Image (cartoon, rainbow, N blue to C red; front, side, top):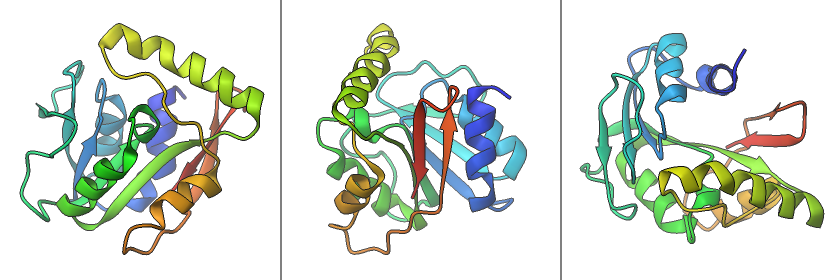
Length: 173
């Protein structure tokens, strides 16, 4: 199972067939395409750069204000996006604005000084190719949860998984 199939398999149980999902920071669109296939939900993609490799619709946006009205989607989805933003709070706020039912966040759980440095460096390399910001944040699951606790919503850790032989631990909120 490749990376995007693994991610989609981990989060697919959170969605139902027919629900609408906005993937913010969709990248190549591969996770969204696989999620649509396994969960049967409708996906719309948005990112600051268009390097979509799927037939799913993608809108390029300014990285600040999502180009959709309030409550346009059942869910908003952020897969490894927040650590690439200088300030993740405005993105979470926008995701909450456009989602009727909730926001699903998948992020790295990075503990320890050395692991944080290595993760930030390695995770920044491929993004320079596409003009996307480098890795600005490496946080533990508890630190991500504390960041989300500043919003007037119920924050729940619903899962976790590992990629690449266990080096990167990931958490799902």
